[in-house]
Length: 205
Image (cartoon, rainbow, N blue to C red; front, side, top):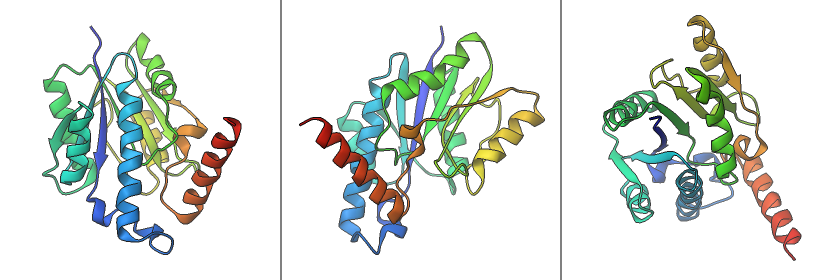
């Protein structure tokens, strides 16, 4: 039986979203980070056939995840890629045949996005990469099986993950989705998110 785990890494919230400093104070940035994390957790939890693991050293993130009924892992590693490897090992120990890494700052993500990224894995080993809107970073990464390529998050990770798949002779699928592509990292991203919310509210009237 196939078992997919979504891994959502969360950094120290007091240090997150520092580039939003000119627009938001620390408490506002923390609140925004928790709001987005909750949206990602809910989207993953509502996707059929997937279990969720939040990995963080920030107690606020872990408490939020636990209140939503998802699994948590204390992050004892030194960088994101090491944290993800540790989380992947945990997931394999809990029966994972595939994993999906989800950025914690994807406020527009929907269960349909996650389900669509999982579809290529139905026929066997694969890598599915969903880039950020600048086509530089990786906002979501699906691997079947776990470890089919190593994690290489950081600057230029979209191309890095494509290259790792090519080096191993693995056909990588690129999943382009506007709701996954918007991660809130800069003031421009924040303005775009707010405009999307305004449009959404307006369409419901």
